[in-house]
Image 1: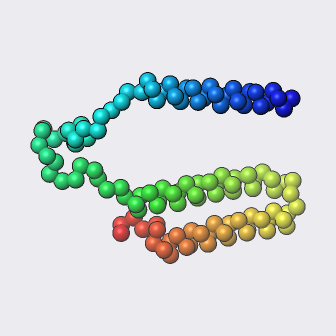
Image 2: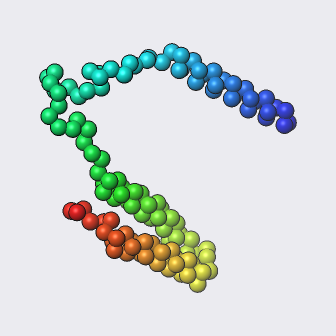
Image 3: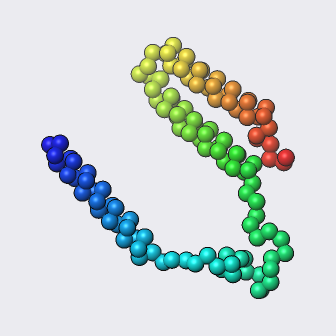
Length: 118
């Protein structure tokens, strides 16, 4: 049984290694040319920066949204399990989880991470 697993694992490794090597060999090579990397503005040099700076504020808001979105998915199963759990343990767990969420939200609000117009 162990021999079969070892053989199949090594065969999978060898096949994936062969595919990666073949893809790197057959890949279209791009040359790092100044003209190809420059932005197109009718043949002239760009007036300003061609690359816009990334908004760190937007990224922070997106991460906070994802965190609270995951926490909402953890909150959703609490309603159906109320009938199968002991009521005091359900209340304690739900209240504890909600307090942690509210403290995190208060901390983000207090730090100014939720301000859009800064």
